Image (cartoon, rainbow, N blue to C red; front, side, top):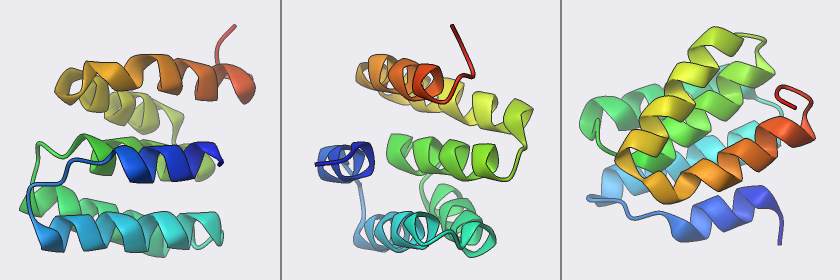
Length: 100
């Protein structure tokens, strides 16, 4: 099971529409369709600004688009909403050489 699958399984979405957008966006991100994925996460966050998974995935996509400052803000927000994500985000950033 990869890191993306772990986060997908961990999600605690408050509504079905947000959940479906996060699933769709994560699949698009895994396919490298980052701009389309970003649209999904932006919409999910508009529907439910407290969805930590949407913020997490938005950070992943923004990082892939080399928009690192925005990505880090998304990761910060994800951790504010779900502190249990902190270690996983730290591991992800370390794996990609973004932190030591």
